[in-house]
Image (tube, rainbow, N blue to C red; front, side, top):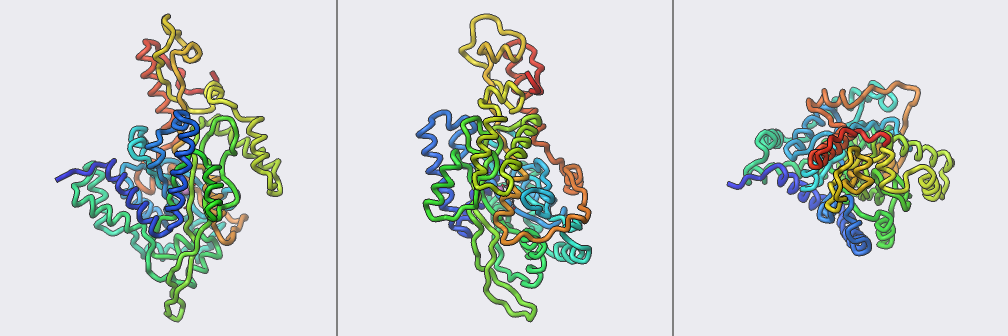
Length: 467
Ligand code: OOG
Ligand code: NI
């Protein structure tokens, strides 16, 4: 029988989830159509330059999903399901003290960590986990009841977990088992028809809409599925032209004429979805919840820690100058970018602010290659090529969460939060949590070594801090 390998399993799962989400949230289908139109326009306009940060084939298929779970045990199960798809926990995001609004979760992203795997199927899932122990949000009584509620539910059937472990151990499944696995896996993320306990949901919603969405129901669901576009400003305008209400702004770096870095995201507002509710007297009635939305993103160049520091400083400067929620924030951001950020890719590289790989050029000079990386680049032997950012931004994530919540919830700032970090997470789910920076650095270093051995030069300038 045909063997369905890890990569195909991931591609099929992404396609299933897309079909499912399209039936659940029809505006998603519009978003995907508009994204295709935008990408085609950029391709026609910019030619090969449009594909500098990913081929059009990759960008067209690219998606990230978002899901939310209630405990480390649930997250460990999620890790097994995504492990079967070749997706590993990468990055740690603490949104509990994020601007513009604190959200009671910590998050990681499950994604392929290998460049070729990302090219074959670029699918990731931003996964958030509630922190009921955090006293800034939950008192000890609510913490206990929340944990008991979450312990009593079962998000993933045993059969799914068994197939996931088998797929991970064997690098795939036979066709019949694969279909069963895909049915169960996609089904686990479908919106449940199960009635929602109205009083319990409302109690959690007073603390945080996200806490209610996670701990107020007995199942999980896909919260959004995000396509990638090559021009997010065009997409924003095109969606509005179709009469779809977008959130106030595009999150992340502003539009400007210099190199795109990291990630820009925006979304259409959460929509009312009919749901059943159970009242304290046991009666069931129809109501609506507004939790799911449509997000879209544009990706830029991965920044080194030094580049990230500069980015954070630029964002802080924009905040300062736009204090009071200036309506011209985007213009201010453009000005700040022109003052602070490198105006070209080559500057990013030269100042060690972005991650790059190195392509040996065929049109290099006839003489023997020089010895240093800077000279090799300057004299046309090696061409630095930017590494695309494959991860997320905590502030944009919190912004996207917040812009789609109906009210702010309540945070007791004077209370202590529970300590959480990547190490804690890794221990609780029994798997390493990859560091995005380490992955980019390793990719850059490997490419430098390969280029060096081809040229017969020893290149050791791996860490691009100041050339
Ligand atoms: C996750 C929000 C974060 C992103 O792209 O930054 C996110 C959520 O709403 O569950 O998806
Ligand atoms: Ni997202």
